[in-house]
Image (tube, rainbow, N blue to C red; front, top):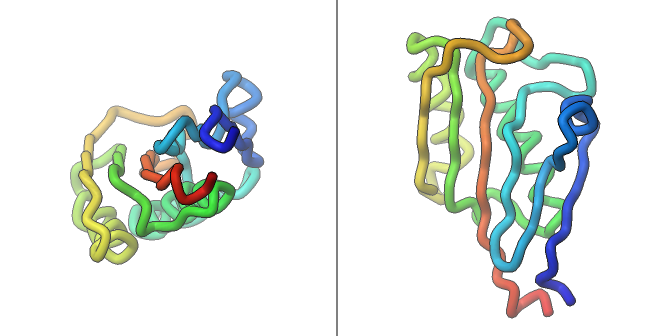
Length: 134
């Protein structure tokens, strides 16, 4: 059954530590968990909110590839920032990646992340046409 729940993992140590998946597909939705700008233990764009946003969204989009989806399937994004000053830089990254798609988007400033070097964490939700993949 192609529309059953399916989960994919990444190289994030957080997934094992808290018992979560990078992405979960259920029916016509694919939900990508909070994604930071890491590859393994390597932080991309330290001190640069634009580069961190691009890296985090790239990681999230890589998770969607596991389901045969890309940026054009994204219907919702969430961006979490630690500094209000970074809104323009993160917004620029979002527009470059999703400007043609225009997903529903939320941007929130939070007090901090588990790793103090992280300035940006993102989530994405995508739609997949289950009828086409059967």
